Amino acid sequence: MTAPRKTAIITGGARGIGRASALALARHGFAVAVLDMREGPLAQTLAELKALGVPAMSFLADTADHQLAKRLTAQVVQEWGRIDVLFNNAAVPQTRRLLEITEAEWDAEMAVNLKGYFNWCQAVAPTMLAQARPGQLGGRIIMTSSVAANTGGSPHGISKFAYAASKAGVLGLTRGLAKDLAPAVAVNAICPGAIETDRTRDGFAPHMDHIIRTTPMGRVGTPEDIAVVVAFLATMEPCFMTGEVLDVDGGANVN
Ligand SMILES: NC(=O)c1ccc[n+]([C@@H]2O[C@H](COP(=O)([O-])OP(=O)(O)OC[C@H]3O[C@@H](n4cnc5c(N)ncnc54)[C@H](O)[C@@H]3O)[C@@H](O)[C@H]2O)c1
Image 1 (cartoon, rainbow, N blue to C red):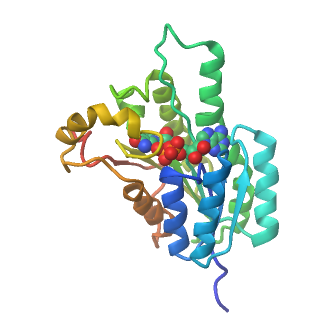
Image 2: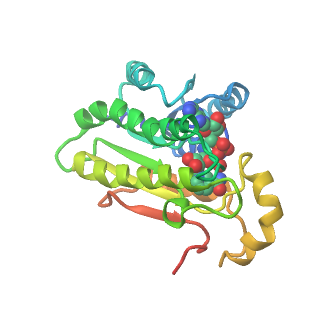
């Protein structure tokens, strides 16, 4: 009997790191569901996934909506019968300093960057737990945090303290759920450093010399630099790693 095709859900999959990771998992043979709030780029990523010859679906949806995460998860399970990987990746920047930020802006940051991650973990966990067999994982959850979780944010203007706080929360969520869902589900996080995407390009531009000078690998990162690590965490066999945090930053934060 051939093993069923593995499936993955990727939040923030329309562009940037999410899109590159969706394509990387498709190249590994995964059926991929991408979710995002940007309609045009989402449709384009869906077409690219289909062009790779794998089953694919897309959802125009907000990760901050708790009930919606449950409904969409049920749709994926109904269509494909299983969920092997959740890549929790959708997040928004917050550039305000403490004396500028409003309560509503703080709440909005946490609603997407932290509660959104919780929403999707809770939505997929019952399916992953039910899929587990003795000695065999039932699923893997991968989170995009950020080096900002540890540094408190960058001088490049796109990741000040509220963003850093949300990303540090993601590390706590990762470590806590690694224990909560063990041994059925592996939960790991990636902390990207400076990765050039549609979101960061303009903000990085004036600081590019500094970024390159302070990155031992001597260049800015690409979405594919993260996607290859997502694919590793999604596919490595055997998997004896959970609650771990991988910095993917060209060595910029080696100390
Ligand atoms: N690019 C970097 O330098 C960098 C560094 C560290 C961490 N990160 C993290 O990597 C992840 C991806 O970043 P990116 O640079 O690819 O950003 P991006 O803006 O290019 O992609 C993020 C995607 O998430 C979507 N999204 C945002 N909020 C959403 C919501 N509520 N519901 C559904 N979709 C939503 C956006 O529409 C977008 O398509 C984020 O978690 C980000 O915080 C990025």
